[in-house]
Structure formats: structure tokens, C-alpha cells
Amino acid sequence: MKCLFSLLFLVLISQSVSGVHGPEEDTLIYLFPGQGADARLFKHLKLPPGYDTVHISYPVPEKRESLPEYATRFIGQIDTTSPFILLGVSLGGMICTELSDTLQALRTIVISSAKTTEELPRRYTFQQDLPLNRMIPKRLTKGGARLLQGIVEPDRKYDKETFKDMLKSKDPLYLKRTVDMIINWEITEFPEQIVHIHGDKDHTIPIKNIDYTILLEGGSHMMILTRAEEINKIIAEILGHAPSR
Image (cartoon, rainbow, N blue to C red; front, top):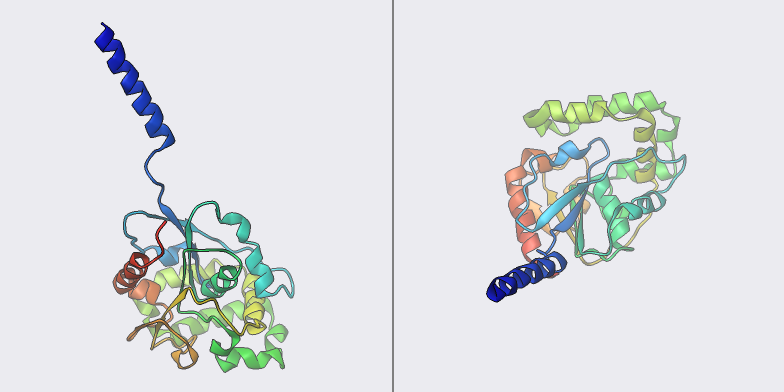
């Protein structure tokens, strides 16, 4: 009987200890989509064991809200008490760039994006002095985006319906104001820990001005979806070299 009680006691103690010192939690990767996208942009993303994801969605910016101001809205959604990683595509990469200057992420990964004003194409930056975008009605902004998406990035055809549906779901005012944020983004330096993946067939943010870390030959602005298998391998390699927990 005494042996039985001793055994039960040990079992209870072991359960108590395992409750306090349970298995290590997965590292969270916060996913920031592009301007005309949402969580569906990451539907083919496959991560190595030990990582989990949190999808970030975007509210409509305030009138004349700057990109740095907009980025601060997401700080409260990020659990900084545990190690985390930021991953952003296009506009999401710009937001992650701003956040990485404030938050201590293990790693910041930007894809098909820009990290400084100088990396943006001239068709954006010239409007800082001649704000044509502000003269265009919001519904024309959305209509123009829907018309040009397939022309500027022809490999959209590989997942056409997803890209069309994501853009269709966007509020025209959101699109108009996020365009204005990008045009008027002023940033000259970026944190060293940023890993930038870019394709040499990106027509939205052409590679000629990009200080990239990893080049994906033939990759377009849509490659997070259209070249998902290769992107997954690249991200796995990056995570393998991320600082340890």
C-alpha cells in the first residue's frame, strides 16, 4: 500500500511539473499582406516545425496618415513577451520595415517590397511634388488597380481568381489612402536584420533599385503565391539561421 501511495505521489508531481514546464511554444510569425491582398495571399505558405502564424488585417487609414503612424497601430497586436518574427509582402514589407525599427523581432522578412524611399519606382515618388493621386476619385483608384493588376503582373494568371477576389474585397477609400501613404513614405535607412527576397521580374517594384538579400530569378510581384514552393524553401533556410530562442 505504501508503495502504491508513493507511486501516485510521483505521478502527481510529474504532472504538476509538466504543467509548469510544458513543451516550448511555437515561435509566432506575424504575416502582413500586400495592399490589395489579405490572409489568402499566404495560403500556400508552409513553415518548418516550431513556428505558427498570426494574420494581420488592415483598417482604413486616417486621412493623410503617414506610413510610420499607420505601422504603430499594429504594435498592440504583437506579443513582444515571446520571440517573434515579422514577415510582410509589398505594403506589408514596408510596415514590417517600420516596425523592425521599434520592435525586437528575431528576424524581419520582406518579400516583393521596398525598405526605403529610394527603392520605390519613380511613378510613386514624383507624386510627392505633384500629388495626382489625390485628384483621382477613390472608385477610380480601385477600378484602375483592378484593370492594371493583370497587365503589370501577367503571372497573376496562375491564381487569377484569388488575386481578383482579394482586390475586389478592398474598400476604395482604403486603397486611395494606402497609395498616398506609399507615395509620401520618407525613409532613408533600414535595420540590418531585415532579409529581403525579391524577384527580377517584379514590375510593380522593379528590382533595379532594390538592395535585396535573396534574388528569385523569374519571380514577380505575385511570387508569394505563384512561386510558393520556392519561397517556402527560402523562408525555411532563413528561419534555420534565425537567432535561437
